Length: 397
Image (cartoon, rainbow, N blue to C red; front, side, top):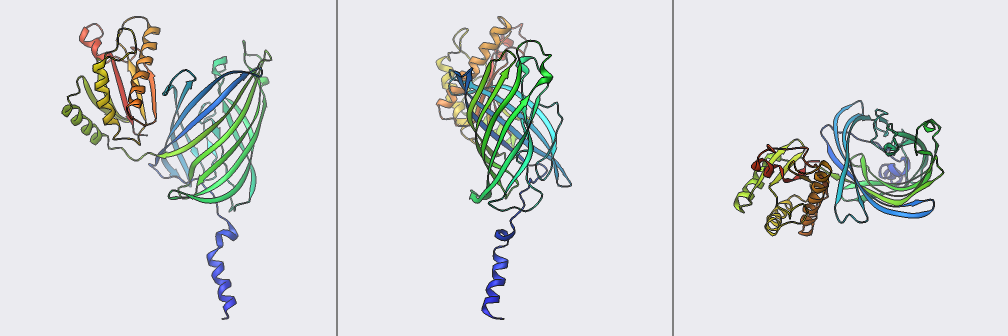
């Protein structure tokens, strides 16, 4: 065999992916857990005039429950949080939604149409064939819009045609990643809402452009960056425009040895003599419960002794930087329901911001519960002290 034939045969083995491409697919592994954190920064205009800015922090905690015939049955918890311009450095947990659905290897969803989440479906959607950098294709997807504030309880589905371009392959960390470019136009009239009383949207239009990075090694998203400009036209002819950027990124959620972590924290609490503090665990994670936490009366100003306690708690939380945190505020049954809710939110936020100021870098949310979840009898002084608490949950996923 001459040298030219040898070289030719070697090239056939060395560059098949260059010649024939590869198939991009979703892969499912029963028991796999991860979370996708999306941070949105947007400006809102009303009739062309600037109204306000907001930052939105959304999280999807994903678990693959089972795999059948190349499809995965997914269980997900979606958390929605928002921070307005005046809210400081921590996000308030506004809503939590659960959903379960099937997905196939190309990325098609089989999901109850009444679910609000996931907000984006069938995106990305991959061809059922091998593709290479430079290839382009189109596929149908769905955006889901939430108009509950306008008394429209059902999610509004907006079909979109997404344009895809496979740009290149690269390496990010330990994964081979395909960079894609996506863009689509949004346009949908909403005549079915004409009978709805009060103010509500009748037209949605806009555009989205996205750089999407697909993890070919693990068969799931790696990250994305996008820009958007979306307009709602209402039945009173007022126009709301949302302009901004968002970044989504996937984070691993390694299995959490909750009993080990609970034991570690309990030993530290005992060693450092942190008073009125206990630890519990449940399916969602491990909670540090600060009972009878003291603020100035009817305020969210921490007393000096509580600041010293929280500095020690910050030292504990720094051991688990890969975990997300929720700081929950609870009050005793005193005052009005509205007053209790506001106070519990302010106090949870103050505790979270104090922890951040002392080096806790975890993704962190806060939520106020008022007096809705008592742990003791509010008719006794001792019971009220137990109910007047802050709980810091270290989340598994």
